[in-house]
Image 1 (cartoon, rainbow, N blue to C red):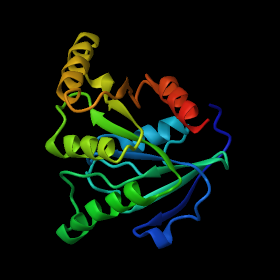
Image 2 (cartoon, one colour):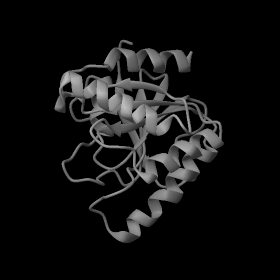
Image 3 (tube, one colour):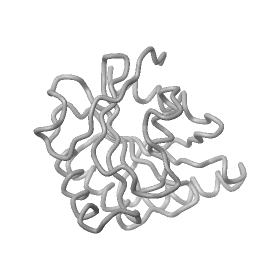
Image 4 (cartoon, rainbow, N blue to C red):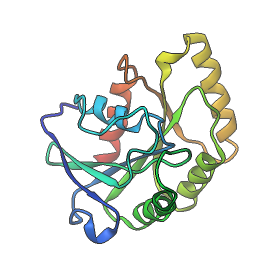
Length: 194
């Protein structure tokens, strides 16, 4: 897809602060520091549109980015380890669950896993939750540039075996550093938004 325009619109914690319904949305979910913002920035050909940080947990609200004036990318707060106050972390689960469970304009979810790590209990809970509520999703394994090609094959197979007992997802690999996987991810986005 040719990205003509991409802009940050707003951050929200509650449905009443979301943009008005009507434009399709693609949500990005995953653990803190898994590369959600880097994936968004790479897809949109922007370096700093979505905030990236080496400190986990910087995304503390739901961020809406309007793409080509046609659809939103929605960056959800990461779960798991995060350097944020406990009170803020307690809000994240209900905030994300409310968005995923109630947002009518949500077309599908891109769930992100670090290819070097086995899915956590929280990852598996989210996968089962998406399946239970019949929310379409794509699984993207990030940080592929940090391992060898042989190790990538082994890790992808291992992750598929760990999750396929519960779900049978579409699974792609991606590197923000090299751009590997960018076009296949865009193809899936376009297909699901068509």
